[in-house]
Amino acid sequence: MSFTPDNKSIAKPWLPFLVPTLVLALILGITLLRVPKADMHLQLCQPHTVFLDSLIPFFTNLVDWLPYLTVVLLLFYRAGWSTFLATNLLLSTLIVQPIKHLLRAPRPLTWFAENMPDVVLPLVEGVKMNLWLSFPSGHTTTFFVLFFTLSIIACAQNIKGKYVVSLLCFLAASFGAYTRIYLSQHFALDIFAGICIAIFSTLILYYFLVLRTKNTHFWAWNVQKLKK
Image 1 (cartoon, rainbow, N blue to C red):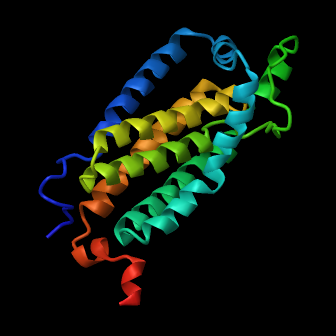
Image 2 (image 1 turned 60 degrees about the vertical axis):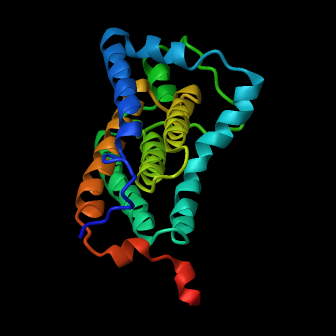
Protein backbone atom coordinates (compact mmCIF):
# COMPACT_ATOMS: atom_id res chain seq x y z
CA MET A 1 0.00 0.00 0.00
CA SER A 2 1.11 3.59 -0.52
CA PHE A 3 2.30 5.72 2.37
CA THR A 4 -0.50 7.04 4.57
CA PRO A 5 0.59 8.62 7.89
CA ASP A 6 -2.62 7.77 9.72
CA ASN A 7 -6.36 7.83 9.28
CA LYS A 8 -6.74 11.26 10.85
CA SER A 9 -4.28 13.15 8.64
CA ILE A 10 -5.81 15.50 6.11
CA ALA A 11 -6.30 14.14 2.59
CA LYS A 12 -4.28 16.91 0.94
CA PRO A 13 -1.49 17.89 3.36
CA TRP A 14 -0.06 20.39 0.87
CA LEU A 15 -3.24 22.47 0.82
CA PRO A 16 -2.87 24.59 4.03
CA PHE A 17 0.43 26.04 2.81
CA LEU A 18 -0.41 26.13 -0.89
CA VAL A 19 -3.56 28.25 -0.61
CA PRO A 20 -1.99 31.34 1.00
CA THR A 21 1.08 30.92 -1.20
CA LEU A 22 -1.05 31.01 -4.34
CA VAL A 23 -2.86 34.09 -3.02
CA LEU A 24 0.50 35.76 -2.39
CA ALA A 25 1.74 34.79 -5.86
CA LEU A 26 -1.47 36.09 -7.45
CA ILE A 27 -1.26 39.45 -5.66
CA LEU A 28 2.42 39.74 -6.49
CA GLY A 29 1.83 38.79 -10.13
CA ILE A 30 -0.94 41.35 -10.58
CA THR A 31 1.17 44.05 -8.92
CA LEU A 32 4.10 43.23 -11.19
CA LEU A 33 1.88 43.85 -14.21
CA ARG A 34 0.66 47.20 -12.90
CA VAL A 35 3.66 48.77 -11.15
CA PRO A 36 6.97 49.58 -12.88
CA LYS A 37 9.93 47.46 -11.83
CA ALA A 38 11.93 50.29 -10.28
CA ASP A 39 8.99 51.85 -8.44
CA MET A 40 7.96 48.55 -6.95
CA HIS A 41 11.45 47.79 -5.71
CA LEU A 42 11.93 51.20 -4.13
CA GLN A 43 8.57 50.93 -2.38
CA LEU A 44 9.28 47.45 -1.01
CA CYS A 45 12.89 47.94 0.11
CA GLN A 46 12.04 50.90 2.35
CA PRO A 47 11.90 52.09 5.04
CA HIS A 48 15.01 50.66 6.71
CA THR A 49 15.22 50.46 10.49
CA VAL A 50 18.04 49.58 12.86
CA PHE A 51 16.12 46.53 14.06
CA LEU A 52 15.46 45.15 10.56
CA ASP A 53 19.01 45.93 9.48
CA SER A 54 20.14 43.57 12.24
CA LEU A 55 17.47 40.90 11.87
CA ILE A 56 17.17 40.53 8.11
CA PRO A 57 20.80 39.66 7.25
CA PHE A 58 20.67 36.92 9.89
CA PHE A 59 17.32 35.58 8.67
CA THR A 60 18.23 35.59 4.99
CA ASN A 61 21.39 33.61 5.73
CA LEU A 62 19.41 30.81 7.38
CA VAL A 63 19.10 29.15 3.96
CA ASP A 64 22.86 28.61 3.94
CA TRP A 65 22.55 25.92 6.60
CA LEU A 66 19.03 25.43 8.01
CA PRO A 67 17.60 23.30 5.12
CA TYR A 68 20.53 20.90 5.29
CA LEU A 69 20.41 20.69 9.07
CA THR A 70 16.70 19.90 8.74
CA VAL A 71 17.46 17.07 6.32
CA VAL A 72 19.75 15.52 8.94
CA LEU A 73 17.33 16.06 11.82
CA LEU A 74 14.49 14.48 9.85
CA LEU A 75 16.55 11.27 9.65
CA PHE A 76 15.82 10.89 13.36
CA TYR A 77 12.09 11.19 12.64
CA ARG A 78 11.29 9.64 9.24
CA ALA A 79 13.79 8.73 6.53
CA GLY A 80 11.14 9.26 3.88
CA TRP A 81 10.57 12.89 4.81
CA SER A 82 14.30 13.53 4.98
CA THR A 83 14.66 12.10 1.47
CA PHE A 84 11.71 14.17 0.27
CA LEU A 85 13.27 17.44 1.51
CA ALA A 86 16.75 16.57 0.24
CA THR A 87 15.43 15.64 -3.20
CA ASN A 88 13.30 18.77 -3.27
CA LEU A 89 16.29 20.97 -2.50
CA LEU A 90 18.27 19.25 -5.24
CA LEU A 91 15.53 19.46 -7.87
CA SER A 92 14.79 23.13 -7.19
CA THR A 93 18.49 23.96 -7.40
CA LEU A 94 18.75 22.15 -10.74
CA ILE A 95 15.91 24.34 -12.00
CA VAL A 96 17.09 27.66 -10.56
CA GLN A 97 20.81 27.62 -11.33
CA PRO A 98 20.68 26.96 -15.10
CA ILE A 99 18.12 29.75 -15.52
CA LYS A 100 20.27 32.12 -13.46
CA HIS A 101 23.39 31.48 -15.50
CA LEU A 102 21.57 31.48 -18.82
CA LEU A 103 19.91 34.86 -18.28
CA ARG A 104 22.59 36.55 -16.12
CA ALA A 105 20.05 39.18 -15.13
CA PRO A 106 21.42 42.23 -13.29
CA ARG A 107 20.78 42.55 -9.58
CA PRO A 108 19.12 45.76 -8.31
CA LEU A 109 22.45 47.43 -7.51
CA THR A 110 23.68 46.87 -11.08
CA TRP A 111 20.34 47.66 -12.72
CA PHE A 112 19.86 50.98 -10.93
CA ALA A 113 23.48 51.99 -11.58
CA GLU A 114 22.94 51.42 -15.30
CA ASN A 115 19.38 52.71 -15.69
CA MET A 116 18.74 55.16 -12.83
CA PRO A 117 22.18 56.27 -11.58
CA ASP A 118 20.72 59.08 -9.47
CA VAL A 119 18.86 56.59 -7.25
CA VAL A 120 20.70 55.58 -4.08
CA LEU A 121 19.47 52.24 -2.76
CA PRO A 122 19.21 51.81 1.02
CA LEU A 123 21.86 49.19 1.77
CA VAL A 124 22.76 47.37 4.98
CA GLU A 125 26.33 47.80 6.16
CA GLY A 126 28.36 44.61 6.10
CA VAL A 127 26.15 42.78 3.58
CA LYS A 128 28.02 41.66 0.48
CA MET A 129 26.09 42.83 -2.56
CA ASN A 130 25.73 40.59 -5.60
CA LEU A 131 25.72 42.18 -9.03
CA TRP A 132 24.40 39.52 -11.43
CA LEU A 133 22.39 36.26 -11.59
CA SER A 134 19.28 37.95 -10.22
CA PHE A 135 16.51 35.90 -11.85
CA PRO A 136 15.12 33.78 -10.25
CA SER A 137 15.79 34.15 -6.52
CA GLY A 138 17.45 31.01 -5.26
CA HIS A 139 17.04 32.05 -1.62
CA THR A 140 13.30 32.47 -2.12
CA THR A 141 13.01 29.06 -3.74
CA THR A 142 14.89 27.43 -0.89
CA PHE A 143 12.84 29.21 1.77
CA PHE A 144 9.59 28.06 0.20
CA VAL A 145 10.84 24.52 -0.47
CA LEU A 146 11.93 24.15 3.15
CA PHE A 147 8.83 25.55 4.80
CA PHE A 148 6.40 24.02 2.31
CA THR A 149 7.93 20.63 3.09
CA LEU A 150 7.70 21.20 6.85
CA SER A 151 4.06 22.22 6.48
CA ILE A 152 3.30 19.06 4.49
CA ILE A 153 4.97 16.92 7.15
CA ALA A 154 3.00 18.58 9.95
CA CYS A 155 -0.30 17.98 8.15
CA ALA A 156 0.48 14.51 6.81
CA GLN A 157 1.59 13.29 10.24
CA ASN A 158 -1.40 14.93 11.92
CA ILE A 159 0.80 16.94 14.28
CA LYS A 160 -1.15 18.85 16.92
CA GLY A 161 -1.72 22.42 15.79
CA LYS A 162 -0.83 21.51 12.21
CA TYR A 163 -2.75 24.45 10.73
CA VAL A 164 -0.94 26.89 12.98
CA VAL A 165 2.35 25.28 11.96
CA SER A 166 1.40 25.66 8.30
CA LEU A 167 0.57 29.34 8.80
CA LEU A 168 3.86 29.96 10.61
CA CYS A 169 5.71 28.15 7.83
CA PHE A 170 4.04 30.35 5.23
CA LEU A 171 4.90 33.51 7.15
CA ALA A 172 8.51 32.40 7.62
CA ALA A 173 8.89 31.59 3.91
CA SER A 174 7.30 34.90 2.90
CA PHE A 175 9.51 36.88 5.25
CA GLY A 176 12.55 35.02 3.93
CA ALA A 177 11.58 36.03 0.41
CA TYR A 178 11.05 39.64 1.47
CA THR A 179 14.54 39.82 2.97
CA ARG A 180 15.94 39.50 -0.55
CA ILE A 181 14.09 42.65 -1.63
CA TYR A 182 14.88 44.53 1.58
CA LEU A 183 18.59 43.87 1.04
CA SER A 184 18.28 44.86 -2.66
CA GLN A 185 19.63 41.48 -3.72
CA HIS A 186 16.57 40.76 -5.86
CA PHE A 187 13.60 42.36 -7.59
CA ALA A 188 10.02 41.33 -6.87
CA LEU A 189 9.92 39.45 -10.19
CA ASP A 190 12.80 37.28 -9.00
CA ILE A 191 10.85 36.51 -5.83
CA PHE A 192 7.73 35.63 -7.82
CA ALA A 193 9.69 33.20 -9.98
CA GLY A 194 11.33 31.63 -6.95
CA ILE A 195 7.95 30.99 -5.34
CA CYS A 196 6.58 29.41 -8.52
CA ILE A 197 9.59 27.10 -8.83
CA ALA A 198 9.25 26.01 -5.20
CA ILE A 199 5.55 25.24 -5.65
CA PHE A 200 6.23 23.22 -8.81
CA SER A 201 9.16 21.31 -7.33
CA THR A 202 7.37 20.44 -4.09
CA LEU A 203 4.10 19.33 -5.66
CA ILE A 204 5.73 17.27 -8.41
CA LEU A 205 7.94 15.46 -5.91
CA TYR A 206 5.06 14.92 -3.50
CA TYR A 207 3.18 13.17 -6.27
CA PHE A 208 6.05 11.08 -7.65
CA LEU A 209 7.99 10.41 -4.43
CA VAL A 210 5.54 10.45 -1.53
CA LEU A 211 2.40 9.11 -3.17
CA ARG A 212 4.21 6.66 -5.44
CA THR A 213 6.55 5.14 -2.86
CA LYS A 214 5.03 1.83 -1.80
CA ASN A 215 7.59 0.78 0.82
CA THR A 216 6.03 1.69 4.16
CA HIS A 217 9.16 0.51 6.04
CA PHE A 218 11.15 3.20 4.25
CA TRP A 219 8.78 5.89 5.53
CA ALA A 220 8.75 4.51 9.07
CA TRP A 221 12.52 4.00 9.36
CA ASN A 222 14.79 6.45 11.19
CA VAL A 223 18.40 6.37 12.36
CA GLN A 224 17.40 5.69 15.96
CA LYS A 225 16.45 2.18 14.89
CA LEU A 226 20.13 1.50 14.19
CA LYS A 227 20.60 1.26 17.95
CA LYS A 228 18.18 -1.64 18.18
